[in-house]
Image 1 (cartoon, rainbow, N blue to C red):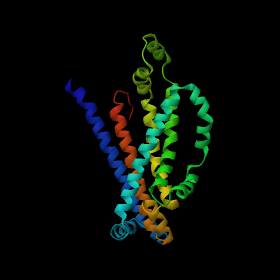
Image 2 (tube, rainbow, N blue to C red):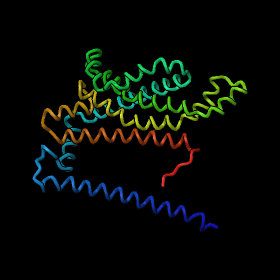
Image 3 (cartoon, rainbow, N blue to C red):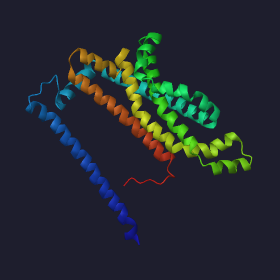
Image 4 (spheres, rainbow, N blue to C red):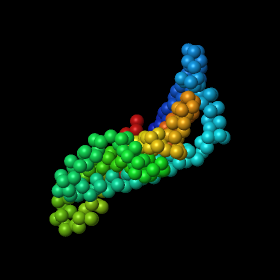
Length: 267
């Protein structure tokens, strides 16, 4: 009996070890190609710097270019913009989902704002609020807002109507119907929207910093471009990617904990 229960665990452990080994191996191969292929092909440093050159530039940026404060500025802006955009998107999605009248009335305006390129708002926000953190926060909120709004609104349309009718039979209040039926039913799609938006948040912050920021990793990208310092641009892009990956996996971990009751197929 004990053999049948422990065998799957060992099998899963071996497979997980193999997957980690393959990921590490792929990463090492990629770094080796990055380090040795550009010099072998005669690609100059200002086109593609090697991995070691990027690491040397990283140390210089940390010592001379205030890399730490700039990284923290982008990280905080990404988290705050993502949180505000997520709250507003989810709130608007639930409110519109509970009122078909207001959904029909506001749908054309929401669609128009969604179609408008969010990047184009960055210069406008800078003219309104100046060269500070507000423009990049607003761009981030706009970019994060719509995927969550759309996901939540769609989930509200697919709620089991039989359960809703049963709740009405038992004279359940509208607020209680939302908490007991609509909210739990919408959580999977809400978290799907949050995962998508967690990566978009970094894009929003970067756009704000590229267009008119004076701090942050986007600012360092612009500064590195002006100095023809490709290694600085590479380092800033790598750090931006790490922020996006960290946000994504943080949301995924929260989703796994909140939606632990759902059956998952990770194999």
